[in-house]
Image (cartoon, rainbow, N blue to C red):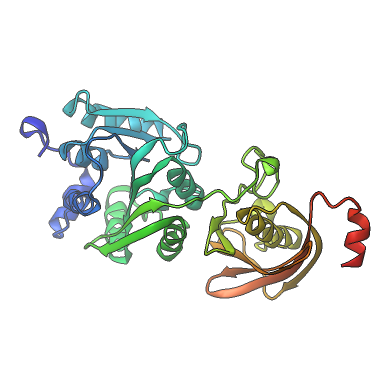
Length: 345
């Protein structure tokens, strides 16, 4: 129940789920209770959709900033939910892939059943991680297999089509959070899987000098916008989906892009160690085609550093298989005779 006994205006989908014994709102309440979010600070609710999570948070006493990129859905949610909590919930328009907030600006960030709706879920995760404070919490709620089955039946009944499943992969999301936060708790509900991440670690291994990089530069609007995170003291990784814009043969990521992913991973591994260096030699092994539109993980680690030469290795994992791998040698960017140094490696 909300303030003064007001209840959340149930959607048709909630009523149909209730007939099968499912309580979506109840699962949201359970997730919020387990997350133990900071009550004295504002919570950011990303991709609010129907406003269930905004309602749940406000009902629990939180101040909430809740937003969505769908202006029509946002208007409906404001009309149905906004008036229930005057002064407690601020609804606003924003893109989950480019949140309009400064780094570390929220102590708690929540996303409920939204990652599977977003075209680039890993980018959305990176943005949510960016805006959560170092001592804050990130709560992710998304459908499990039973949840997708149930909601698909509901959508078929209401809309005549199945519910979108998207490219978000639960294990991928879990690995990302584990590499970005000191502690990750996970538990299962009837329809949803819940992840609570706490203790944000440093997540930006890129260099300010690299801001326009095609692979990982944040200021390159035409780039891949790869976000690498520490995976130990001498390794990094990035979860992403390569769109068909970068394909060679139909459905297959172009070979130069594959090489770029591997090279960027190794470069960012060095950035994480405070080293700025240029690729002197790159050896790539293409094991199996890397598919567009399918989640992948590119990772790299430092093998050794000798004098001014750094040796690294990288690989691309997709659908449980190693698709490509590489080794490379890097030289410092300030090497005075770079061409001669490269030729001698």
